[in-house]
Length: 151
Image (tube, rainbow, N blue to C red):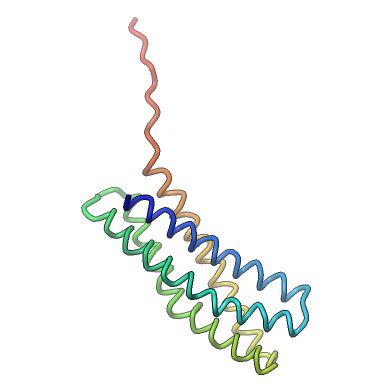
C-alpha cells in the first residue's frame, strides 16, 4: 500500500510541476498581462496540491528506502533532497513573489529575472522527479529470467 501511495504522490508532484511549467511558458509566449496574472495566481493556489504531494512522496520514499543499500535508492534520496531544497528555497518563494507582482501589474525586469529563475528551477525539478520515477519503476520491475538450456 505504501508503494502505491508513494507512486501516486510522486506522479501528482511531477504532473503538477510540469503543468505549472508548461502553463507559464505558454502564457509568457502567447498571453497578455491578464493571462499571465491568472496563471501566476493559479500556480500559487496549486501549491495546495503540490506541497502535500511532495511531502507524501518524500516521506513515503524515505520510509520505503530505509535500510536499502541499493545505489538506485541512494540516488533517489540524493535527488529528493535537491528537489525539496529547490522547491522550498526557490519555487515556493518565486510563486508568491510572481503572483504578487502580476496582481500589481508589475511586469518589470525583476519579474523577468524571478520568472527565469523559476523556470530553470522548475525544469530542474521536472528532470529530477522524472529520474526518480524512472528509478522507482526500475525497482518495482521483476528481473527477466532467461531460460537456460541444458547442453
